[in-house]
Amino acid sequence: MKEIEFWFSIGSTYTYLSVTRIAEVARETGATFSWQPFSVRRIMREMDNVPFPPSKQVKVDYMWRDIERRAQDYGFTAKVPAPYPLGKFDLANCVAVLAMQEGWCEDYVRATYRRWFVDGQEAGSEPNLSQTLEEIGQNVARVLERAGDLDIEAAYVEQTDRAQRAGIFGSPSYIVDGEVFWGDDRLEDAVVWAKKSG
Image 1: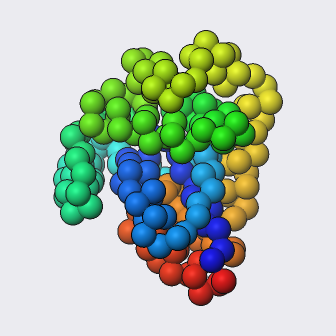
Image 2: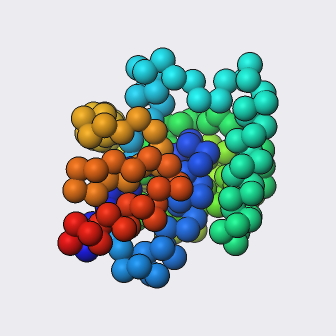
Image 3: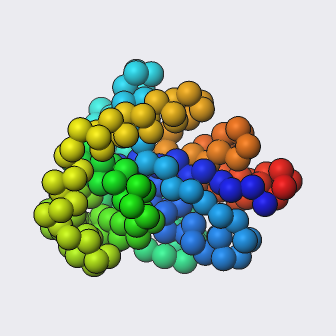
């Protein structure tokens, strides 16, 4: 089965659903995923797309209820509304880029989202950031220093450029053999395609 690229931005609300269930999907199907952080915010701004503006409260309310329903269907909790939008969106994702490079991305992202959607702690801010890093055995001071380095910022830009070149316009997205699948509800479709692709 082909590896599935899992493209995400910490700050995307629906990404909580995929982050929380992707390990179980992998166990049940044998699928493998590479975790790819990027800035969906930059891409959406360039597309002049504001997904859930404060002026459209009915749409915002629907989003929270939809996430809550879907989480219940999957067998886990979403305490909504969660803090949104994130004040430190880029920091949260720069840490994810560093984590991707060092091999602890999945643990970091899963714990970050759990604190955000279960404990109500805003991702990328305190106490979420420090507690998450401590939980997964990372040195907080070291990670925060490295996440601000120019090479990590450059890698974050390159990840976003790669996502854009691949045709990604939202988070979560999955890529299998050049095919893009957008949205948590397309995770299973991506797995089926990966099986077909060999």
